[in-house]
Length: 248
Image 1 (tube, rainbow, N blue to C red):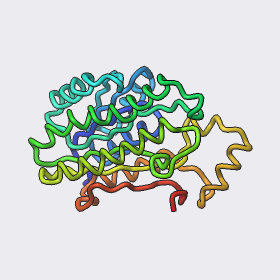
Image 2: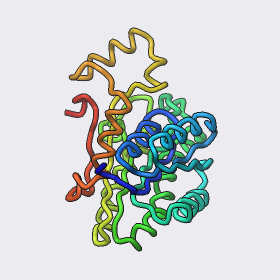
Image 3: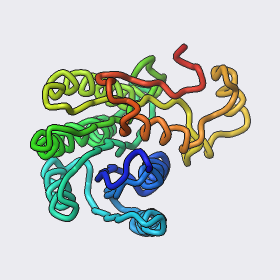
Image 4: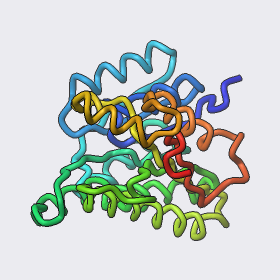
């Protein structure tokens, strides 16, 4: 039997990139999956069709991750439709990269609200049904930028470091209710962002990755599936770097 047979999962920012791979990987392991998306309706529908083709239930929810109240509405809708919530993956995220001297207040606010405030809002809403069930998994998608920093990403690194703080604190708050909270910190992943790099930038990137390649989104998703599954039943408050050895 698949490791997540008939579990209910919610993945924020699940219409593309890492979020898309996570949603599909959870479905592969037997979960019914809800995703949120901000504007990529066609991409979201493609993900939902893929999940349903696997014999799983799926639902999509258009939501602006920066709006606090929308998190509660999404969680309420998921619980109403599926009856419970077993796995929450806080994946929604954006970048607005520039050096601190050029970074605007809007650049800061947009990234912090989308990446960090949304995880606070969805975790606050999502932990309530999990507490009633006396079980659940919250998995936050951080970044190695939140562990070691990255020039030109003060806002992004701060948001991802904040996710690590949320992870460790919530793990302590929710452990007595059998809710495990962990984080995944990806390194450089084959997404729209890395595809825009020129050959010189790509060569410089390879020089700092011991495994000499970027990750495929599926390699991040497989670690999320592990943290959502019974295989990680004695882990909480952990940050797993999936980075080809950069942080090492």
